[in-house]
Amino acid sequence: MSHDNDTRRHVEVNFDGLIGPTHNYAGLSLGNVASASNAGETSRPRQAALQGLAKMRALLALGLPQGFLPPHDRPNVAALRQLGFAGDDGAVCAAAFAADPALFRLLCSASPMWTANAATVSPAPDTADGRVHFSVANLATMAHRATEAEETAGWLRLAFADPRFFQVHDALPWGQHLADEGAANHMRLCPHHGAPGVEVFVYGEDVAGDQPGGRFPARQRRRASEAVARRHGLAPAQALFVAQSDTAIQAGAFHNDVVAVANERVLFAHEQAFADPGRLYTDLRAALPEAVIVEVPAARVSLADAIGSYLFNSQLVTLPDGTMALVLPRECEQNPRVWAYVQDLLGEATPIRRAIVIDVRESMRNGGGPACLRLRVALSPAALAAVDPRFLLDEARCDRLARVVEAQWPETIGPDDLANPDLWRQARAARQALLAAAGF
Ligand code: SUG
Image (cartoon, rainbow, N blue to C red; front, top):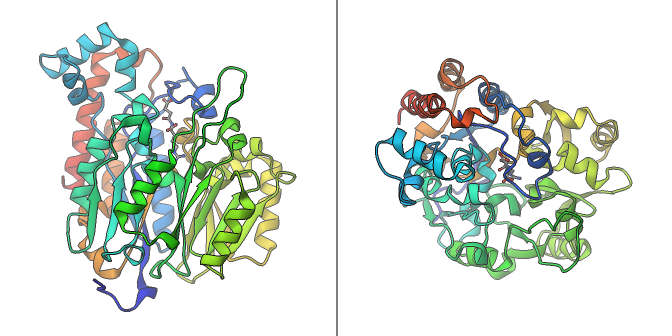
């Protein structure tokens, strides 16, 4: 079903996760260096959410469409009820905190902010039925993230409800056996957003060997990626399954989007991102002869610098004039080696013409850069018109959301604050106020 003959008018919309009022540093993600090293620090949820909104406004100011997905209900009272805690909401939280404080902390995480992990998205030009397909990610590897799928599915089904254009698939079953982290391990290369593309699914392989302090887990199973490609109706020639390098995983690249990003015909990747980069580049060039592969040598930017700065967790976006910009976290500017590389890159003959620096430091300290905070969805004009408008932003709607954040998001959360019933009430009321302001 093709609704738009002019495929050049397709656009990519970024749906950013609005950072929730319980944003905190609980050190929940083994293998995520920033999460581990900032464990126990005091977070700034209000500032975090305003930083996120400022990023959304920066993309709008570039002339790009922008959407958002709301924060999930935290503490996650519904999940606690499933686990047998009973009474009114306050009693459920109090009983859970008393019985199992570690469990309770997991269920306070604001981790749904990282919407690159909400789902894998195959745009309409790639799929057999010509609709945009979404597979909600099961996030099975990390306990605090595994609770996200149900609420995520609800929001995506509301945002993308029109069955003429969209299909939202449930998360894959069977927990870690089909571990799936969504778009963070998925890249799409295509001549332009409205043309059929090649979708690259990056998975982690279990490799034997010792790592001091324990090995970091691979979070994506190849079988999960294959199932997603099948469900989305991708032609076999249009889907590549590529192993992440274990060196990258063990250095802290817990998702592929920490070491690689693609946009239209450009792949921007670290030399050590993939187990067999030569094969990927050959396959890519065969599927898409106009592919531009920008491989960053480790001699210029080490894996440690890449992971410390999140250079590859930039959003690589196509501007209305057809050139591309990297939307980088401020940490890139603060690393002299990374910043020198970026300056050189802008002087090279690639489509990447601009570097735009933004500040998402609160999220970065949990290992979430600009690209983690957004789910990209390429849409035809007709499909964009079918998206529930409550999920789309303009300046006025950003102002409205920001006002709620300024008035109601906690200023700080220290490690002991998650034990405070006042915080539980404040966080849930703040989220309700935001939902009301957004029209939900
Ligand atoms: O899953 N951090 C997230 C960061 C996700 C980044 N997303 C992408 N790369 N697309 C994670 O590890 C830390 C939470 C804490 O420790 O409190 C956390 O969940």
